[in-house]
Length: 113
Image 1 (cartoon, one colour):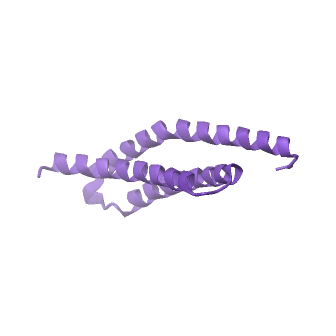
Image 2: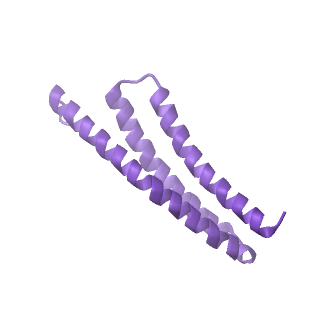
């Protein structure tokens, strides 16, 4: 394989790993038999955890890649940033909606949360 093909494969794999993690976490939470308010709270926590893990993964990749593969790390970073840019507004919107729904449910039940 050529260097160019290897690079595209590696950056695609990293993007797929992040996207797959997001989808898997959301699917797992949504398929668990729990009350709606508890599920929304856990989904909010998980989306924050996923953001942190994605940022940690990015940092870890940058720290462990040797100087000999600088070109590859420079190409992976924009791919991860693009994935974050695409998913960050969606995650923020989901978080806002769940926060809104949660506060509406708490006001209906008299729960001060």
